Image (cartoon, rainbow, N blue to C red; front, side, top):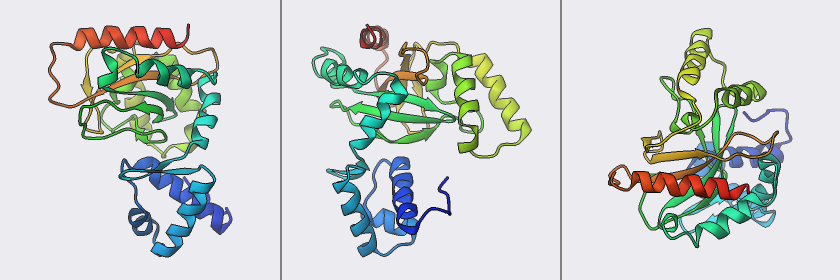
Length: 243
């Protein structure tokens, strides 16, 4: 939620980041429409934010800038994990053809910290800074199944003020689902709200780091015959990241 007490310039910049982090494809036109600003004003804001590494250009729009990568080191508890992830992925015989991300659960949001894109087309192409809700109202997203109950509940409690207000019934339903399904393991791809199939493996980061996974993104029509092999490779990759 953006605080209205911020100065107009800061408020607009935060609003731009908020919209960009929630959309796979963000353009100046989309920003102007959603924020109710003139396209010329948005162009000036975007230009300044790109110069400050708060945003960056992609072939099909805008994304969160490289300054974000520096800030994620605190979330991971290490500045080396993302670098190791990037270098290992591109040399991995099996996983390099697939899109793999490093995700962190922050309250009720799954935050993409880093992404490497494979050759397979997906309904949603994840990018650093992209946020997705972990709770759809009926059940949790696949990432929650790869984490432990205590990790999920602690993250929700720590960032409770940043999330939407929920009724007591919804909170109880969510907590019951987490206790029943957040068992620290997900062995088969499951459909996420992005439209991608996801397979998540928990990354055992140092104490104090946020709940984090290595996430494999697959197209809904992906054949199931190599799922076991992919899970084994992803698990080994996640273990290697912290050795």
